[in-house]
Structure formats: C-alpha cells, structure tokens
Image 1 (spheres, rainbow, N blue to C red):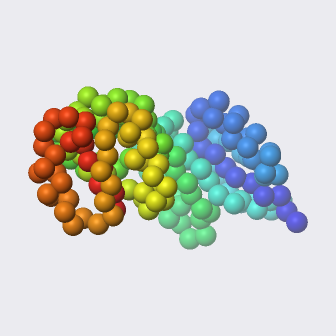
Image 2 (cartoon, one colour; image 1 turned 90 degrees about the horizontal axis):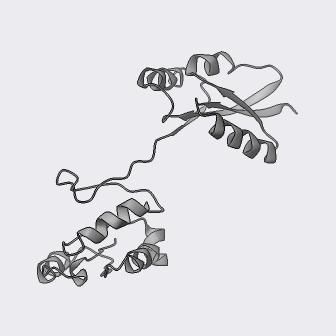
Length: 175
C-alpha cells in the first residue's frame, strides 16, 4: 500500500509544524509549501497517494489563492480545503444586518452583543446548536436573555413586544 499524504500551502511555519504533527498522528505524510505553484508541482508522486490540499488563505496572496482554486478546476484535481481567516463581525455595524457566524462565538463578538443588549436580535442557528441549547446558554452566560422559538410564527410580535431596552428585549429566535 502506498503512503498517503496531504499538502498544506501556507507561509505560517507554526501552522505548518502543527499540521505536520497532526498528520504524523494519523499516519499521513505532510508536505508544506509556500505557494500554490510549488504545491501543484508535487501533486503527482508514484510512491504515494495525495489525499488532498489545504490552503491557508490567511497567509496566501489573493493571486496565489486564485491560482490554487484554478488548479483545482483541472480534471483529476485532488480535494481542496481552504482555511479562511477568522473574521469577527461587528453586530453594531449598520451594514451588517445579516451575518454568518462560526462556532464557537468569538469573545469580541459576545462583548459587542452585550453593548447592544437592548436591541432586538434574531439568531437562526444550526439544528444541533438549537436542540442542545448551546447558543441559548452562551447568550445567557453573556447576560442576554434569549427567547427560543422553533418556527418563525410570532417572531414579529415578539420583536414588537420586546422593544424596551433591557436585556429581556434581546430575543434569540432559533429555527
């Protein structure tokens, strides 16, 4: 059986070291390259099987990210995972009326929510977060008082009725 390997495209030596150790624990060979052209040149290796390529978007130039995506449009290209840089949206920003968040919520985001606790907020969550109550618990720990609903019916009435300015006026509608 041939060796299995994964390629990481990153300029972050620390991330490369962590990646290599994680691959070793899984009995995989890790190869790390600074740019997509170097990685592309190593796709074919008669002695091993390439499982996929991971691109660290935080350390790649926009041109290099584009090139990596273009390479993966080629027939027979390996699987590609792009690690997007973490972004912390600001719920106080008027332009961000709808924001997609990643779990776990970043502390800076929670602090921003606390600063606007008197405003109505609606969170549409993944089913797992809703069923387990994870989001509701996190909001309660932050001093917010979520109201959970599992259907959009009555949401407008809840938002109208809670327009006061207290933490109780911060419903977290989940569906």
